[in-house]
Image (spheres, rainbow, N blue to C red):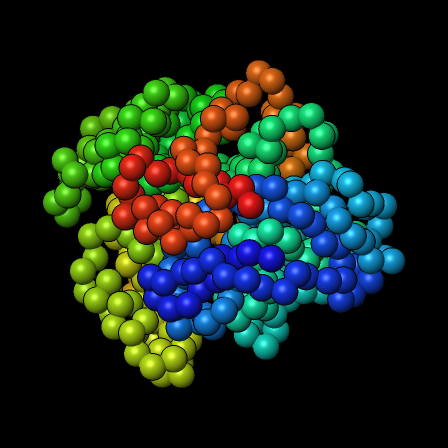
Length: 396
């Protein structure tokens, strides 16, 4: 089969790989019909390179048709059309029973001190071959895959694999009060969808912040008030702009949908790039023990949120030695909620919205549909925010 593989920092390739086979009774194999390119994949493209191995198959947002099932794959059957959550969970352990599928005790990668295994996402999360491929082995298939109708285009349901539940959880964790204000930092796929969900749920004021003109325009077109970061680049300026819109108080809630590679932190960017270019063994050890994130977005969130407000982190962070302004966090009595999205926990709330009325605009959410052969160009385009790329979908 053809698959998108990581070769080195800024170097992904499309190569031949053996077709996956059933390895465990709870496995299934699907023929992938659509697979998303996620902002989290870009972290592998650059900052998380120390945890990658040449030949790793990338991708964690798959949808497809079941080709083969193991003897304990529940009632899943060949021919079923499914979308597959990005994390691998059993559905029956203590953590899954709590709705915390990203902490599944059956698939936790204990050797790395990490939570549930993820498709296509470094040795930290099990080095499970990913979904930007023609075929995918799906462990824990008795629980993970969600069966779908066969007569609707893929884009209607594809984003259940990651974007929709991640954005839904981000809004839920933000806990915006009635008549409150939500600020969303970063209008990539997750931030954009979080704005749509918040507006759909009746949040009175949603403010999106970004510096890419196409993304600002896209959010504005959905009814979001936008702030262009390029016009507020000085220290504290974006916070001042939000306070002007919120009676001088600040936002009730802030979603940081940016994460570890935030714009505007040159020193941390230098350290990240330097670590990624060291020899593999050295860079991995450094990343495990002394890595830092670019915290510009998180620091902006701390400044923007009002006293007693809530910050919801959906952007991925991976630093182990991040310096945080604990005095400010404590003094402002800020609540922090974060983590990978617990996909299956949120799907029952989201599915009823995936109708012909399309209130969240999923049917035309993707900006680019490309074959797998275009993956190297797609990664570069998305990473550099060129050609209006917000969401890329591969169609193997």
